[in-house]
Length: 248
Picture (cartoon, rainbow, N blue to C red):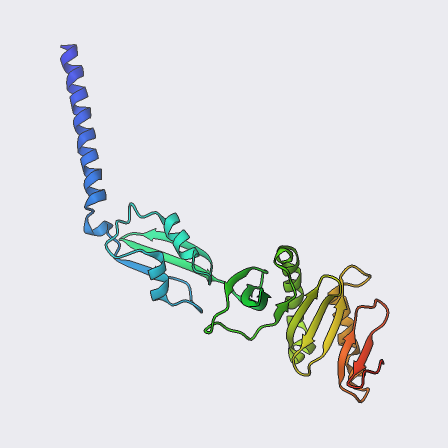
């Protein structure tokens, strides 16, 4: 009798397991409508992308099984697009996928092997420049490929620091030129002035040297000639050369 009861319990458990497995198989292979993706919702405001392109990049389609959809795979697909800095995804029932995207924010251009690339505010080279991209940024030149990981974040920190300066917002910065021996040189837009900062490592940082230029600007303008070169590389002296190449 005990053997019969034990066999009966085993049969019941096997039956439940088979039914459950069959149910899972049916849900996976032929899910009911409430488990099929009905909508992909983009929650973030977009500047460089549009919703259609973002959904296309995700490769999530209406009718996909929301239970078997792997969000980490969707995330990897979206991150392949260069303008996407980060992405978050969430499944919401009934059958919706929500996407939040953080886009890259370009702050400079960099020249590498005669090609131009966009650089983020954090110093990341994230995209080769094409005709439709914004271009009104300072251009970083002179960096060798092996110097970029070390030098680029420092140069971007300097470029960002100039955004708080009324003078440099008025003059604009067209180029930041790096040379392994001569150090850093900036060129303003209007008027075009060469600001020689030199190597970093003396008494003053690059930011402090540019602050000296800001403090001396009214005096420099008062000399009667338009300055062409301002040498800020000396720790205790500012050298100004005008169109006639006279030191002041």
